[in-house]
Length: 532
Image (cartoon, rainbow, N blue to C red; front, side):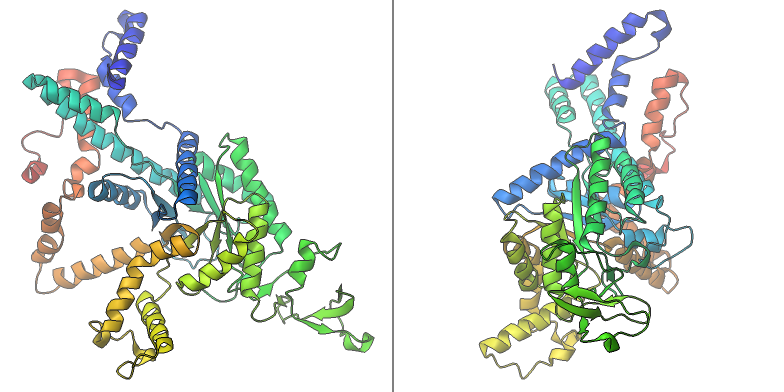
């Protein structure tokens, strides 16, 4: 018997055990509802998806072509539609995740209205979105399994045993839409205890992977903006410990911590850590500070801070806002140190926030990290904050310049112009954009590629196109031609929006609960029948 049939038999035994009070319970209906709710709690989701990520990480270690990908999302429906599309077009959700972006929560989910990415949004909105995403993913499972159950009933009614066995096999082997979510906890929303409490809520909602950055929590900036302030290593490592304790407390023993460093673009620190020996982390962190030599007491102004560093008294350069400045051109070295210390102190994956998508730049840092941690792996932000077209056209321009090619017909500063779109340089740049993820996985240790804000931009673009036509000369044709007809032609499940919202599942439940008395919505007058 199939697993599904075994469940029916077990539920029948349980019903019979209860006797007359349970006589109205249909074991097969109960088995269907059980199959449609495979993950009753977020903790079960976190355990299941952590196992997926650990397996994927091991496969990547053995073969760097086995990298993983995700897209950012700001609503459960968006995440659901992404995974439906993945299964439709690629047949499996394997190595495809979702990313939960703090930027998008701030911009789209805060009760304050749109906010910049500065950790000003409600921290409770983070676990709330994780729970919402998994609610929609589980609903996608329930909907598709519901269709299989309908097909099973039809095969039985037709007496087609071969088809019936095929559907039973499909039910047993059904691949869930529930995939890992890498969730952004920003800089922890406070001290290490605050980080622990929020991490715990995120894990209880289903998060198996939590990404935390080394910025000062109350001065946090978007990684692609100026004014970033980092914390000393011991402060950051305390928060990594806090997240690990949260995972262990909840029984998610293989939860994943992604340690993000913003040091490449951060030139400031708020705190000078206490060094007790020449080789400790505080000493290494302070060595990056820009300092002035103190030769005598006359070199010290009122309120100045003086430290002893490598046998000399020095005065760290302090700005008017009390922040301390790092030496110029130390970003790469600070990133490397951040990454090594994070991996040595419990992190599983790294995130290096860069100012451009350049395999060589990322690879240079990873090579240094791997001298100490050979299996170091990165999560990388394929950010919409980068002008991908301009960046890659300039990279090709620079490479061809080194090769001695004649580039008189190109203006490097104007390569974004549409007049270059059909040129050899532009075509070559697009080839490199297309292969960027595979190249970076192979040459720069990137295990996971994500786009943080894709649906922020796709929603704006598609809405712009619809509004342009609908409120213009096209009128209703703009919707019919630009949306609905495409949905039908491309077999987008959402064209049957009533079914997607759960109407057919509700009808099934009404039939289970009320039998022939059920008042169902799916009769012949339901306009969804127009879509076949």
